[in-house]
Every structure is written in C-alpha cells, then in structure tokens.
Length: 338
Ligand SMILES: [Zn+2]
Ligand SMILES: [Zn+2]
Image (cartoon, rainbow, N blue to C red):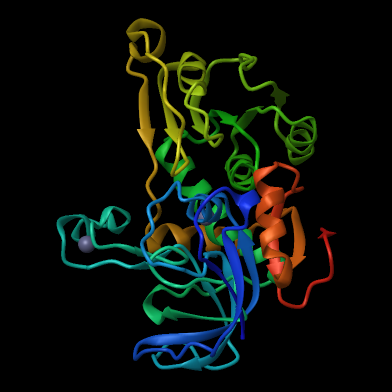
C-alpha cells in the first residue's frame, strides 16, 4: 500500500513527509484493519510533522480523522464491510484514577493515532476495536472525516466552556473545529458571536447563523456567558476574558498555544470568570457528538486532496489557504471543494 511517514520532522516546506510502498498492516487480536476512504488533515498533524510535538513513534504515519471500511475484524462489534472511524484517542489504561472517574482523556498512559501509532495518511490503517467509532448516516466520507477530531474536540470545548442553554457564546478563530461547534451551540439555542481574522470565515459564520462576526480583537456586541478560543494565539486570552460577563468561562481548545501575556486580575479574572484548557477527549464525548451529528445535519466545508498530495495539503494548511477542512481521499481528484 501507499503510506506517508514523518521521516524528517521539521518545517513543512522542507518536506518532513516521505511516501512509501509497504505491506498492508496486520491487525493484532482485538484490532480492526480498515481500508481508508478519507482522512482529515488536522493542525495537530502539522505539529507532528514539524516537530512541535515530541516524536513518539519514529517515522509515524500521521492522520487521526480516518473514515474507512472494515477489511478485517479480529474483535467483536464490527464486521468486514462496516464503516468505522479512527480518531485521535486509541488507548487508555482503564485503571488509573482519571479513567475510573470518567476522565480517560487525562490518562497518563493514553496513546494517540498518528503520533504513538500509525494513522490514516495511507491506504490501510489498524485500530483497537474498543476505540473505533460507529459513524452517522447522511454524510459523505469526506464530510465525516473532520467530525472525528475537529468536531469532537470542538464539542468537548463547548462543554468545558459551560455555555448555559440559550446563552451568549463567543468563538475566537473560525476554522474546522469552530464552524462545527458553532452549529452545535446554535442548535442548542445559543446566540453566537464570532471573532476571527478571515473575511471568508466571517462570511461563513454569518451564513451558519452567528449573530455577529468581527475581527479577533474587537469586542463582541454584548457580554459573553462563555467563550471558546480556537485560534492558537495566547494573546487573545486576555481579550476573550475581558469580553466575558460575570461568572463566564473561557475554554482554550487547542493542543498548542503561544504564550499568554500577563493577566490583570480585575479586568480578566475577578467576578468569578474562569479560564480552562481542553485536553483531547473521551470516548463518551465522541459518542455524544456523533449522535448529535446523526440527529442534526451539520454543514461541513471540505477541500479534498488525493492521498498522493498529502505533503501539499499540509503546506496549504500551514499557509492558511485551505477552504474548510482539508481531507485526503485515496480516490480523489485535485482540490475539489464541497
Ligand atoms: Zn488511565
Ligand atoms: Zn486533530
């Protein structure tokens, strides 16, 4: 099969990925072998390729938004021909205090697809069946891919922001994750204000139902009950905290954030405003979000690339010129947008 590996972690323009012809992986007991139909290109893949995240598995195959068809099942629960999703989380210990209290996202022994184990920038991938996801009907393969990380993490970030029903939500940055979380919040009766740089992103925000869309540092038109920072920009933390109403919560969604400038206690935190991070997700988050996606037809903006152009897709993601979520499809033509 064809597979891309991160053989030289470094700047994406220097070509950290190399393409290989290699044997199809053999699933271990308890695992599924999946034929990849689509794999999303996530910003975390960029952090793996560029070495922002430490190397866990040398020459790993990146990609953790994998939509596929089960080719071989060495476990109960899935059969050949079933559609299955492979997401970021692929192992937890099940015994530590975090796992036992339902916070397996914090398990110190957790392992991740496309970082600790080979992922979906390939024609086949394996996954422990206990961590494989059942996928909702009514979406194309390319549309499902970004739901598996951008969607699930955005959903968890929204929950961590403790948005009250019908509350006022601020969304900072408006990429793949934010445009999905915004649709969840709107479906739950929220008023959403979007703060983002891109003119196209602001237009999409308004089309999806946001009440306002302005620049990243602009104040929203009303105080916020909750906010989610999707942009990896630490200098927006004080800006977003200052936009919160009394008792409001800001959740930082990213795995990577630039430095946060000094906070001023009265302007940014007093009146019981809270600042929280978001770390990966649990399988319960994934299940809840995918059930939500089955009940509410989410609009998913994607640009497809053939698997052979994975290196170019990463460069274009780094340059910020991908419309919607970039998705690799072994069968795709060049640069189709949907
Ligand atoms: Zn654990
Ligand atoms: Zn991701």
